[in-house]
Amino acid sequence: MSRSTNQVRNTLVRFHNEIIDFCNFISPTDAEHKRRETAFDRLAKIIISVFPKAKILPFGSFATRLYLPHADVDLVLLEPDYNPLTLMNKLAKQLMKMNDKYEDINVIRSAKVP
Image (cartoon, rainbow, N blue to C red):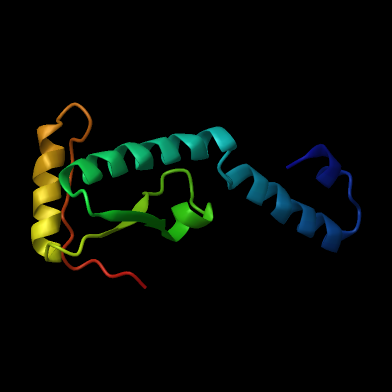
């Protein structure tokens, strides 16, 4: 809790300030977000190398910057020439070949985008 919040006497204002302090504490810094963007961009380049027609878009908490420190990075991969299962399996195999970068890849066939 910030010093300015500790000095507030009005309980309602203090509670408001505590919420703001917590949001600032839990929100990603610009450097943290940049690391995630770099990882996303690196993965997008790999995907494009395998599927040149693909379109890769972030969504969810990463896209809105509302993620928690250990959250994943959600992306959607659109590729008109492959069915989704073939697409996922081919991409997973390609990523596993790059064992210095990716070590635990799970194809989640039943994942749904709300």
